Length: 480
Image 1 (cartoon, rainbow, N blue to C red):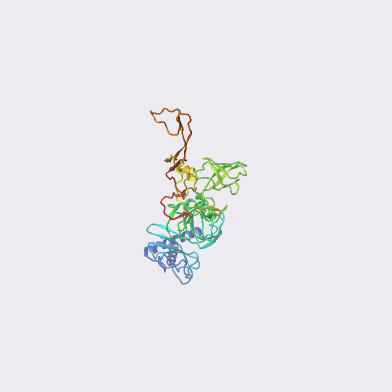
Image 2: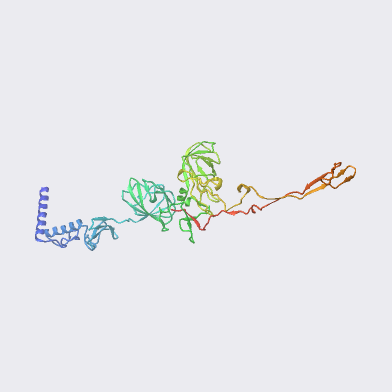
C-alpha cells in the first residue's frame, strides 16, 4: 500500500512538472537560480505552485545560487553558513563563494573562456617552529611564519601533492638541499635571513620543491654568471654587496657557507695512527702551509708537502681510518682559526695562472725563481727589486795597461894595460890591445810595475723588476 501511494505521488509530481513546463507556469520566484530554497509555511497554494517552489529550490541548489548579487533565499532571508553562491556579475569569470557565517569567502574563479579553475592561495596565517622536520601541514594556513634557527631538512609528509605554502622566516635557518625531498634553487643549501620569503609546493610522499626564494635584501639568490670565490679588480668607491676586499682577512664560516665550500677541498683520506701521511685521490691546488682538518687530524695541522696522491702533515694522525679531510686553500685568514676561512691576499700582487692547470705543469713559475710553489692555489712569490751579486754577472776577462818601473844601473868596470898602468877608460879599438886585469861589478834595479785598468761594475743599488702596473682594488665574491 505504501509503495503504491509513493508511486502515485511521483506520477503526480511528474505530471505536474510536465504541465508546468508545457504551460510556462512557475512558482512565485520563477525558474531563477536564486529561488527560495524552502516552501512557504503560510497561506494557501496549489500543488502546481508547490512544484514550482520546489523546482526553484532545486535550481538554486544545482547552480550554487548563480546570480550577480548575493542570495537571500535561505529560510529567514539571510544566508546560512556553508551556503554557496556563484557570482556571475562578470560573465567570463565566475567567482564561487561560500558563506562562512560572517561573510562570503572566495573559493575560486572559473575562467569560462579557457575552462580553468583557479583556487585562491590562502587559509589564514600561522606560526611554526623550525625543526629538522618542520611540518607545514600540521596547520591548514597557507601563509606561515617560521621561527627559530634549527636546520631544516624536511617540510613533512602530511600535505597532499600540489599543496602550496608561503613561508616567511624570522631568523637564520639553514634549508638542507636534497635532489628528492627538498629541492632548492641553485641545488645547494640555503641560509635564510630574517624577512626572507619562500614558496614551497608539496610533491607528495614527503617531497617538496621550493619554487621561489625572495630575499629581504632584494638580491638574487644565486648568480650563475659570477660564482662564489671569483676574483675581480674593481675601481668603484664602495665594495659592492656580496663581495669583500681581498687582503688576507678571516671571515666567519657560519656567515659565509657558500664561500667556505668554494675555497676548501674535501675528499676521502686514508690515515694511520702515528703517521704524518694522508692518502687521497688528488692533491692538485694544494701546497705547503695550507690547514687541513678532519677526523683523527690534530687541531692546527698544516700541509708540509704533497705528492700527486699523498699529503704530508705537520703533525701525526691520532687514529686510523678513512674519512673526509678538508684543505683550506687560503688558510684561516689573518688572526683566524677553527671557525674562520681566509680570503686571498691581493695587496701589491699581480695574479698569475696556476702553473699546472689542466694537469700538466708549464714550468713557467718554478720555486727556483718564483720562491714559492706555482702549482698551489694562493701561493705568492717574487719581489719588488733585485740586487745583483757577483754570481749574477756573466764571465769576463779584465783588460788594461801595465806601466813598467824605471831601470837603474849601479857599479863600474876597470880596464888595464901592461906597462902603462890602469885606466877606467875603455881601450881604443884597433890601437890598444888591452888585457883586462880587474873587472868591476855593475847591478841593475827597477821600480815596481803598476796595472791601471778601466773602472768596472757599479754601486750594487737594487734594481726594479716591476712590470708596468696599474692600481685597483681586488674584490672576491663571498656570498651567492
